[in-house]
Image (cartoon, rainbow, N blue to C red; front, side, top):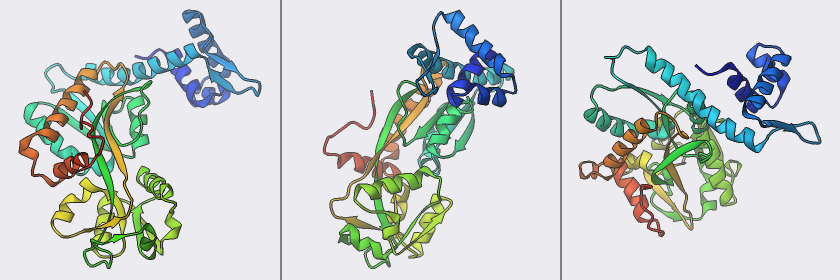
Length: 325
């Protein structure tokens, strides 16, 4: 459904090269030039310009068209699928989530959503946060649950809650339930998710904020999933930094213990995000309403995940609300 010239424009926005765009789209370079010229004539404005080093940039009007075209492209993919579906078929929603939340909190929300909308079909995609934003742009999902910044020029978002990162270990670890200086952790083995994950990037960012690095620790283990990280820590193999709500059940059951670090505080915001001005905004807001209900409902108040989220909010000295109006 997307005009081929808009598709060319979006590709050129990404590559910033007429040659690479032609190769990517399997068309000639003059065809790329022709598509861009057509759009510039249609809108009576320049979309690109070269700087003094012959680097290609978007004009302000080009940036505006880029934001609009990204949403059109994403919606076009979803609407094409929607129109192919027989009229009496249940509506499908496609959800993306970072792994830590997709394996813990999202199923609780999804269960409540399906109780209210039992005829919905659901597809759920778990991946890294930056990949999820790309999936949004490509129209592969309607919305995602993410823990990274979503530029307001490209995405609509609603804050779900704020979560705390804590240091955890086995109850058998010598530092279990103790208050220590950061340097006292360096004699331990650090366990974290594998390279190229946002989880590892967040960990490095947190450590650097406290003048620490993974190389300061005795040794470390990189492993694929958050559940594998938790199991290794429970086996007293080392320590890890994990969102509190992800390990709250294990803390409550005595399978994990917390190590309290002096003057340490690290919090992240979890958002529900989708493409700006999307046709599917009402569907996204419908799911967001269920998120609000689950996280605030007395029926869920005793669940460890919800308790840990609320506990994080209560310790926030700014007394911010959990939800954005």
